[in-house]
Image 1 (cartoon, rainbow, N blue to C red):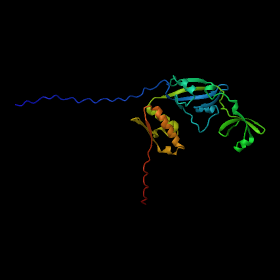
Image 2 (cartoon, rainbow, N blue to C red; image 1 turned 45 degrees about the vertical axis):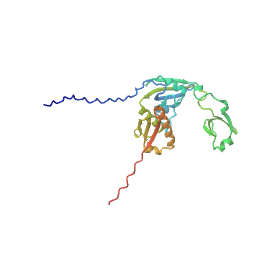
Image 3 (cartoon, helix red, strand yellow; image 1 turned 180 degrees about the vertical axis):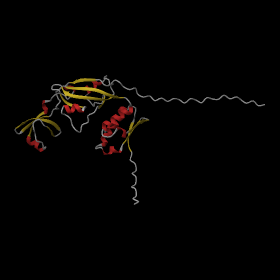
Image 4 (cartoon, rainbow, N blue to C red; image 1 turned 60 degrees about the vertical axis):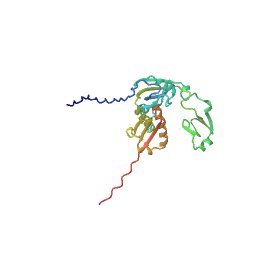
Length: 262
């Protein structure tokens, strides 16, 4: 009589669990944070608003411009998108927190330079097809200045920045800290190509390669190549481990015209 060998049933090995680690949401602005802010900027001596991200403030201050965008501004700390002295004050702030920051001339538009106030003959301005009127801004060569006086045959023009020598005040609020990697890519693309919906772009990061699928509409943007160079440079900053960026535009074969059967 043959004995049947008893065999132990082998347990199937358990599948290894894969976990995806998502970067912890940032709650405090750090030295390399990507954030959205709202602000209004004024000259301290007279309280005049010269810049803002908020449409109501722009209208109330009589500086509203139809083609400007009024929405929270994207700021990458350390990238000099704002004055360095202002960026330094943002580090340590929390979402929703507001602060008034005072910027002295040496950290703002610089001191006034008397050498930049020049007397120019009217005949020279006429060659540039410029008619001087006191208080108006004009361009002369590569310089832009304000006409401060029309004196006979000569014109006095101040080529200093209008903000030179003035203390600047910024009332600024942190609206959002962008923590997720793909959200950061989406944010920098929106900054360079604001007129195209976010959902028209697709983003992926794999094997140290950032791929951004661009909609065909980007081909109609004026000087699009410069926007793309900026996007690539920004993308490599927000994803430090990446080695390259691919910007992909796909064109489908158009459907042939339907035959008229009537």
